Amino acid sequence: MTTPGEILQTSDRREVRARPDRITLEVVIRRFNPERGEDSWWDEFRVECDPLERLVEVLHQIKWYQDGTLAFRRSCAHGICGSDAMLINGRNQLACKVLAQDVAPTVRIEPIRGLPVLKDLIVDLEPFLQGYRSVLPYLINESGEPERERLQSPEERARYDDTTKCILCAACTTSCPVFWGDEGYVGPAAIVNAHRFIFDSRDEAADERMRILSDKTGVFRCRTTFNCTDACPRGIEVTKAIQEVKRAILFERF
Ligand code: SF4
Ligand code: FES
Image (cartoon, rainbow, N blue to C red; front, side, top):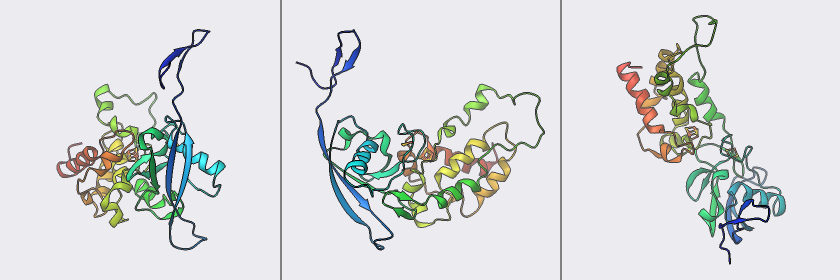
């Protein structure tokens, strides 16, 4: 007798995992359609799926076989593109990184908070992207074209390694109570992406970014609640990056 998940050998000596029993997942989704009025409502669906199915595939099952009007964003389905951040059982997470078995028997899914909802789980990312664009999130170096690549030591590269991992999913910014109350605040993701260049030895615009982040909409709006670090699906130490930018501004050590 085999148990679900057990490694089996096929007749041609390949290893396969025994198929787990299927489960029924109750999926409760906050819906919104501007053509139906201003109020949102809850819809419930039941989906039979593999326990190792990812929630993004469960949402596909609903859209393809139960309600084609359900709207949500996704692209890579592998935790790389950052499209499918949602509030899943009260926590900002990527639907493609959550397994059905980890939320069964019931999962509640809502759009991320603090941004206008366009339809169902799709929010308007423009306020989030405005904050991102405002910190000049690209390499600035006016010293002329080098003849070969700009060299950097492993230690210099390690200084900002953590913040290179950002996929702009907005999970951190939309878990931040300061951002919920003040759309002008640039938000954690913008600061993470500023950090990525402020501490890059090849960049020459750290002063300009720190001037931008010294503004009343900048880094000192952070109240260090750590929601952002808890929410980040890439494991970035967001609060630490924010603290490092604050210290750099205060002591100009960068
Ligand atoms: S810092 Fe993490 S949570 Fe915030 S946008 Fe980047 S990847 Fe997403
Ligand atoms: S679909 Fe790309 S990160 Fe989830």
